Image 1 (tube, rainbow, N blue to C red):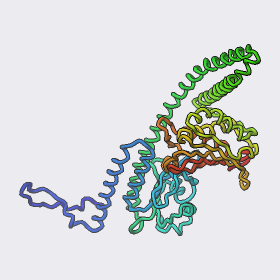
Image 2 (image 1 turned 45 degrees about the horizontal axis):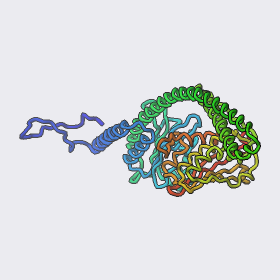
Image 3 (image 1 turned 90 degrees about the vertical axis):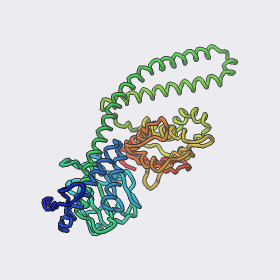
Length: 448
């Protein structure tokens, strides 16, 4: 717009003479429309800048961005997808609409309209999606949503590389226009800057955590040494004590001896596992990661070992630990230590969520159709909200426990991924929680 076309006229005023004002009546229709667009874009800049730079939480930033974007262009639905370089995929981070795409859904970052926009960095308007061959119609089929029109813009700073894309779907009134494109381009640029800053903040926190993790691991190693020595000495003393008893005394104290042996085994096994975890922590800080150690493994004994470790805690909470069908499962190739860690985390996390008198059951069967080991860890606890449930296996998982870190489910997901398996959760508030695992019989050749 040529601002010089605005005619400044003299308006008489009793308070201020010779004060100029804009004579909008002399603007052409096209100039008036362009001025309105310019005003709308300035308002969008003000709104998005005020909203985004008050937070450094990634989820909050993404959600706020999408709400503002859809309101500005009058769209019914939309999504923000962020790039995952390791998977070469675009991940649905947040979705709005009657039938939103589930969080965490991934598409190849070179497929569909979103992939094309991400790769080229060029925005795209499609007012007839049904006839657009590049649209990933399977997303609509999976959700039951019908996309009529669609505008997709890259999420990127000015002249920067895209970090994702923003989609706005089904404009409520009229077709999508270049003005809508301009608005979303402005919003996406501000959003990309805020998202990158949030990620940098998270990266800085993670770097600080890695340093702290190294210090904690070193201290744990030093603290475990006297504990291990003390347990070994105590067991030697107890053995000498029991060996010095007469057969009658030993028979009388048999229950006490069994308890001492069981407690000693539990303590030494726990110390050994802690040493293994401390070594993993040290390797992690150094940027090292040991590959899975696959060998033939039976699920039943691993679950029973977890039960044995947690039996005292479950007993104190009056919770019953059960198994169903595990004895019928065949041996399969697995990293037994990692499998133990995954099951331990699931069962240990379920105990504080289950009320007295409740139960935690580990069920298993062989899926004949896929040849996978099918496991389920089910509790009769309080369940979880959809928001917590949908974030469980993401990088932004949160704990439902006051002092929790949200890392337990990440450990479980990493173990399942290492076995080329799948995991998902079913849970409703007040109706308990069930984690489902699918593990191939041989992860070196198959996948779940």
